Length: 153
Image 1 (tube, one colour):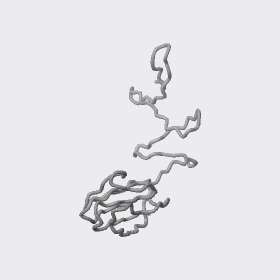
Image 2 (tube, one colour):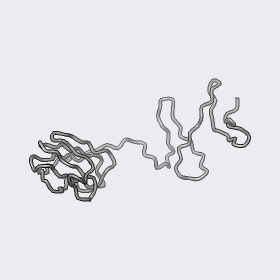
Image 3 (cartoon, rainbow, N blue to C red):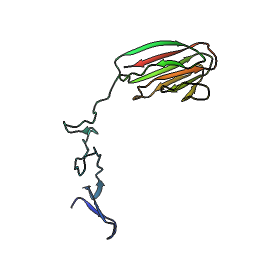
Image 4 (tube, rainbow, N blue to C red):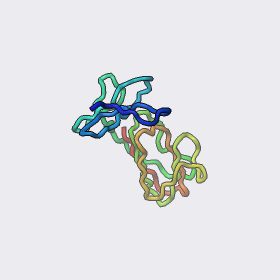
């Protein structure tokens, strides 16, 4: 039987790319790369592996950190740098080794109890997601304890 199906009425009809398998049409979904009128299809093998053209810029391997660097930053009530910007960073881990709440700020702006990204309770741990490579700062409610920081590169 023919693949591709006409969908809709006469005034709004369009053709959907399909593959008929055992009498059921499965629609093709185009993952676009920004190239106008491209007809490249994403192909998945029977083992569930994605096939990508050799000339593609789509990353096909998991990116893993190979180095972990640990630092300790003393708690302070003023805005304190925790991590400098690092384009090579894959992820980082913050452990508030304090009894005081630390206000964490992503970015270069000054951190305070009224201007922050999120609070991190004493004894709390936060994993910075893969992809954020910018500055991280903190300001504690009281200057007791420290922030234990692990940066993965």
